[in-house]
Structure formats: C-alpha cells, structure tokens
Length: 238
Image (cartoon, rainbow, N blue to C red; front, side, top):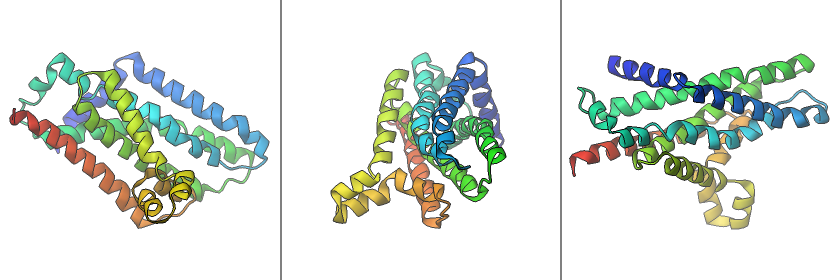
C-alpha cells in the first residue's frame, strides 16, 4: 500500500506541475456550467438533471485527455522501463495511476458543486437525486478511466490513445441508449442494455440505487484494470 501511495502522489502532482491540468479543469467547468445554465432558467424549477445529462459527454473528452499520457508518454520517453525495474508489482503501478486519475476527476467534480449549490439557493432542490447522480458520475468516470488506461498501455502515441479511448468509451455508452435499445428490440436489445454504460448511469441519475448497477460498474473497471496489468506483464513474454 505504501508503494501505491508514493506513486499516487507522484502521478497526481504531475498533473498540476504544468498548466494543462488547470486548462482542463477550466474548460470542464466553463462548458458544463454553460451547457447547464443556458436551459436552467427556461425550465423554471430548481433541478440539475441537465447538468448530469451532459456529464457523460464532458467525460468523453476529459478522461481520454487524462489517460492518454499515463502509459503512452512513459513508452515514448522510455521511462516505463525504468519505472518497472523498481521493486514494485505491476498491479500496484496500475492501481496508483488509476486512483491518481480518479482523484483528478474528483477534484473537478468537487469544483462543480457550485452548480447544485446555486440551483439550491434559487429554489427547493431535492438533494437525493443529486447525490445519486454524483455517485453515478464517479462510477462512470471510473469505467472510462480503467478503459482509457488500458488503451494507453497499448500505444506509444498520445493522440492515438486519446482518439481510440474517446471512440470506444462512446461506443460502450451509446449501445444502451434508449434509441439503440428500441431499434434492436428483443434479445439483442436486452443484451446491449445490460452491457452498455448509459442504462446503468441513467438509473443512478434518477435516484435509483440498485446494487446490480454498482456491481456492473465495479466489474467493468476491474476487467479493464486487469487487462492493463496483463498488457504490462506481456513485456516479459517478448
């Protein structure tokens, strides 16, 4: 655990050693606030469904921007060989990178609390669905991050890692969208609803806490973190 914490601190600090992290946070907050408040006053009621409605799309750009450098840059610069020669297990490095990336997302979400607080000051906001929605965003971000870290470990090019992560995350999210499910119908519709991210995320944003959704998000993240560990272990097979 000590080794994970050391690498976690190093990775998290690396985000803020350059202006890129502050630019990403600024863009995230400005665009999410703008997309939310342009319709908030037209609705005439204190609710933040619109904010959590755009969050998956904001994460589709924020998460790949975070994960694209995690392994791709290490490979390009050659520092991955130095890192993995230290007396530390592959899974410890992967978990440290995952939790540092998740911590960065949590910082962005903490700053976004100004949106529901503002909505609450203007009306009677129901905080139950808000809390559930934040948990949904955290679980969704965890899935995106686990997938993005694995894809970054397969490439030396950050741009390629960014684009592939954004596309595949989008695919996993959209396959359980209502339009896709209704068009497929029957057996394939139920399968896509089960394996897609959006159906489980939507449950949480409605304030429905189902342990099956939590298990799904956990299994999704665990699976791609496992693939990340195996992709690092494959260096020993070459």
